[in-house]
Image (tube, rainbow, N blue to C red; front, top):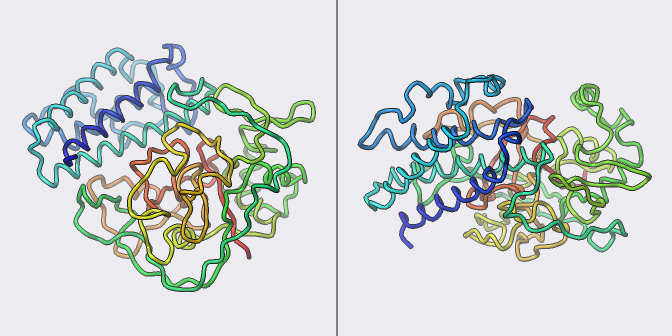
Length: 427
């Protein structure tokens, strides 16, 4: 398959998933209440289309805006987050959908010419990947709003509250050594695509460490909750205590206890808490407090990457090519996989589900690597530097086309409305 054919396939898949996330929602459901963690879905649709137009299509034969006068409204850097909810600011569903389809059709027509320079191929991949980031945000918006599961998701599986000892696999011992971190600072290309925050790569010397082979499970986290972990202030850092005072959390945001039984909400469905599944939707502060309680710690992002890539420095835990069959990604299982499952996705050290299932909190602040240079979109990384925490690995809602073991994501440490989990290291 040629690069152009592959880009066209990616575009069609991205478009299909987007429409499957929006077409089944009524106008009432699309008129979502204000929430600081999500965007109005109609704005997300128009913003995704605008990104194609602004960064690629206007540089071709037609430099004019397709919706004159609306650049500031579709540009996330120009319109304040709360203003996206104001009446009359964002066009209605019909107008925005027509704009979106026009832009996607222009993209298809451009790709079908087959006359793409290497730089245009890179731009195409960038804008498609950006669109996929908004697929994930639409998925966690549906979870936040308790909307029905997406139509492409596998059915909600059976869950058990039985004993969890069968799925605890212990730690992997990672020897001291020099490990590859990040990717080379080559010219941006479609063939060896990565984002600016993954560059320039370097060698990091690490002391030996032991890291859990599995993500922290709901069963493990439940013990922390039932032991009064949310009430023991000595387990929480200064930032964590502030977060608790603000939100009053007593358990993960999608959990509840009813008549002595624990339940988990996935989209609009409550199911018995699946003890073997990874805990998802917890903040950095909750992960940090759990580690204090368990006498463990979070890995650094460099330890995480070393455990994922191995001594060989492979791009994925299993090798150098993505295989989506090895991971819980693309919104199909949505965390309904026991933490000891998907053995074909294990790293050379035996760590499971380092890609997919849940974004994994690390102890690092999100900062640029030495020698950092911005790529096509100057604000893809720079706005988050300093006050965000690094997460790694992608989650169950992340598009598998985006992810490598070098990929870095950033979330504010208080976020618990996204698909974040964690694994721990021995102290």
